[in-house]
Length: 438
Image (cartoon, rainbow, N blue to C red; front, side):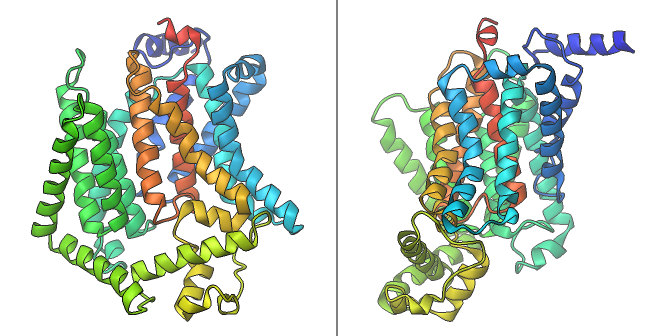
């Protein structure tokens, strides 16, 4: 049996999946968990959360046996920053509770998922696993499953007036994440690479089209906004060579928006409705619309943060907004209900309301620290580092754009997915000197 395991581990190393010279019997379980956690992320409840805990346990066991090796993973500043960033959400909650002198263990539930990924990052960095080699196959299959779930489970979408959703994921989240995953598939295509797999590239293009289709069927304006930003990023990464190419980009974006607006009834209707809601908010005082409420929520969030900059507000405890003078001009009962029950629909401001300036710093770092790490390596000559950086920056950019209009870390499965992706991709993008020499 031991000889059989050794042969498998040697085979994995030869196939370019594990680049550490140290052998570990945990590698098989790690590769299994890494390959599977994105697969049913949007279609099976608790799927990604379960693999987060599995990978954490594996990381914990490995750390006990190889503590000095794990500690060496913190030798460079960027690894320290990634690790610290994944710890910040828990620290923000703790510090704000200290200022309030009101402690609640429930507030740590979601942020603790991100904290667990800090150790997973250090473990994966030590094992030097080529995560994107599995990811580039798993993500397209994941979107195929999302499409099947949408088509063959119409009851889920019926709860959202026919807009694409799964049985536990709302239509905005479903459309947004399918869009971002689709763009990861598209942007990861390197057709000029000598070892480029034609079948895999076709699968990635199909996955991208599925992501776009679900985005349209979800009628999520958040997903559409993220798609525009990601399209610009894809163009700049793959085609930009000189300043005149910017005009080509603007022309292509304008044509794409015009054609989709003209020929897609759902897009046409949602854009027109959005324009009306924004204009009527300022000209007619029409506050209780979808976009009108979002504008009011942003205003309320800024006011509440200024009033509670250090302590924030306890989860679920929102003051009577009509008693605050600066809110009275746009106050409605629906605004009070939405703020109390759904938050501010803006990730960074939502964390600011929750934890004051500590929450703002934490949420901002979750985007910008890994984003900068990935951005600096987009053109790295090492294909493993480049692949992880391209996928990682796509994820961070897409979710940052989405976070301007929705909360992206408030649901535990979203926090688990993002933190695992950042941990695995950053571990590959920040290899040890041993990996760089290979």
